[in-house]
Length: 120
Image (cartoon, rainbow, N blue to C red):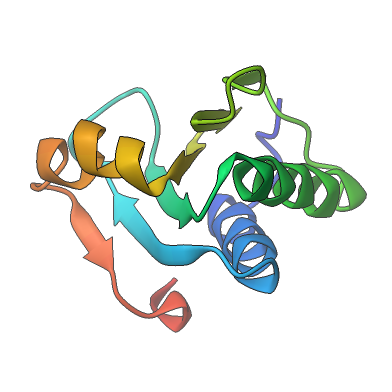
């Protein structure tokens, strides 16, 4: 578990890892006041399945180098939606079609959107 880690540090590292590999439309939603599942969702899009995998791999590598291990990773086999669960931070990497279909931002619209990473 990553209890000793600053949750905001995990969000910043994950965001940078996604941005580094050219993820599209990276969105951070603070859901801490709405859910016990996690404190933050990070949602990103990729142009194709190869890129979703590359994005997820980079997040896992960057966080792993910082000593931050995932609780669970889902969706690698299909690559359409890869979910990386880091306990209090859940990262969703979608292909564009599935991101539109599942529309997580709408479901969690009551969460606080982090517009600028420096807000963390």
